[in-house]
Amino acid sequence: MNFQALNTVAVPWKLVAAALVLDDPQGGDVSQTHLKTRLQKFGFLWPERIEGADMPIMPSRDHPLGISVGAVTPGLPPVKVTVANLGCASCHAGPVYAADGSPDPTSAWLGSPNSSLDLEAYTRAVTTALKRQSGNTPRLLEAVRTLFPDTDAWEMASLRWAVIPLSRRRLAEVPEGLSPLPFSNGSPGLTNGIAALKLQGHVLSDAQEAGFTSIPDLADRSFRSTLLYDGAYAPQGRPRWRPIAREELTVAHRDSLAAITSFFTVPSMGQSPRGAHRQIPAAQRAFAWLETRRPQSFPGPIDRAAAARGAVVYDRACASCHGVYSGPVERPRLERFPNWHGLVGSDPRRTAAFTADLIRYAGSDGYDQILDARPTGEYAATLLSGLWATAPYMHNGSVPTLAQFLLLEPRSERFLVGGHRLDFKAVGIAGQDRSGVRVYPDGYTPWSQPAVYDTRMPGRSNRGHEAEVSDLTLAERRDLIEYLKGL
Image (cartoon, rainbow, N blue to C red; front, top):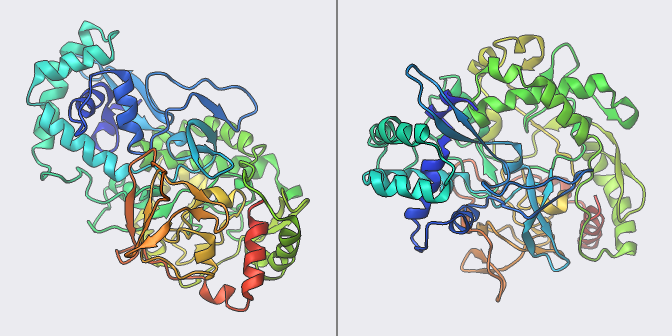
């Protein structure tokens, strides 16, 4: 845990939990059950089971999956405060899906994207709740003690005399209803990691930073020669763009990518580059596990004959950019990835967001020996393993289904995302268009609070990749979707 991260992305966990429960518009008692329900509305998973690993993992009963919690004692005289931060699994563990496309938020699959996680709504709700509830210190502290009865006298005193007064002063500077961050995190399933990195590096100049990215599945990451959607990070001393076959997945290559991912903790967890550098061994262990991981199997039906035809279409029209797969059409495996890069007409905000002033910061405290950081002005072709569970699509999550992405249907200008069921025919968010907003099927209740994705907003255009599918017949596109289900 990093106390300094409270200045940017971390929160005083017990105060935040108590404030969110007390400030719930729906009301309710002060209990762990209520806290769980409140946080699930923002898309956090609080599962009873964790799947997708080669060993049983017991979820925490005290906080959601992916929330890292620990006590810190900074200062002289020292205060004690329990700090919470976002860990990898908050974004990179998604719900398990049933045969009808319904998500099961009580069961998480490690490495799948959590496309319902709404960090912007969470940040704003935390800010509002603390602003409202910190004015009544006795009530707030009583809620802390009820939720966390093991809190000792040292921490209770620290909350009363240090943390709450500091929170009041800082939150007084935040306009009502807004986030304390000078940029938006986006909507469910989106992150704004480059803006967060600029904030940590003190080079954030545009309050309208809109380099949004959609959370991917983590399968087959070792096939990448670069990391990030624009390939801005590459291992030092290696070719930035090069094809990689399965037999080239050496430990040295894997460890070089893992060392880069340790730097991801700077924008996501508020680490300093020096602190992130110390996490390289842990990142290498995580990457070694990822190399063995398979995505969730598609839980719906696959038309084998159509998928076999789709495999031929894929090899002809898609493999040159998105890689060669082999094996049964219901469950093929990636064998070679070209690491193609270029422009396909998609929203340019993300690739323009990585500016030259980030090179110095990304190479500080020893990372210049590990990380070759530079703006590319392009996008790297995405890995398609686990694609069916990653809706909405495009690098910025602007297209709700593969049917729309492949232009079998018009692309929605606005649609709902968050807590969604998946449509296993169109492959993506289930629902129907009504007045420009994609709504959920009758009888389905989202497990988290949905939000409208508006493609007219900066950084969220749904244009792109039209030319790449224009030569395919409608039948070929339908067959291609059937094949993509199995990846």
